Image (cartoon, rainbow, N blue to C red; front, top):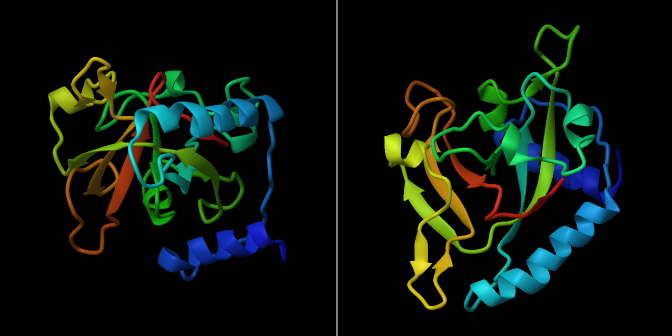
Amino acid sequence: MQSNEALLIKTLLARSCPSAKLSRVQRVQNKLLWRAYANYRDDQLVHTCAGGDVSNEMLLFHGTAERAAEDVLAHQNGLDPRFSNGGFYGQGIYLAEDPSYPIGGRYAHRISGSGGSRVQLLIVKAALGSQQEMGQRISAETRAMRMPDVRVEGPPRLLYDSVRGGPHRPFVSGGGENGYTTQKEFCVGTDWHYIYS
């Protein structure tokens, strides 16, 4: 619990959940997924983004809902958007900057025997690349998204690498009122993302 990673996670958690107590940090590594992620981040994103930090790499939170994180990460692809039930921006992996968003919704895995007071979240490293800003716009069209929009008309025609929207409340578009949690969220999908968990 005194490792640099654990101290960083404590800091990230304390920003929005000051009463939360971090009880365990477990690092899960998959060398094949890491190599694929690093290749995407270092090679492919360089060719699709212009200027600045082309990878736009961030540490973000992901809830695994009713499935324990170990079960989710046992899949050969790690986090796999094909298991997504969809959301505001279609089928994809939804990530949050703030841990209170997945904790406040149905997204965090509630540990059995704790009465819902203990939860488990994944912290993932994500190379978001060029983000399509959605703001608070939610519609049937955004919910049916299969890919982000075109960023640069071609040739070559370039798509955004990920989608960023919000702030939203869990399950509800738009900012919070009456103490509801609001959060900018990121959606990364099958063919237009890469994250490492």
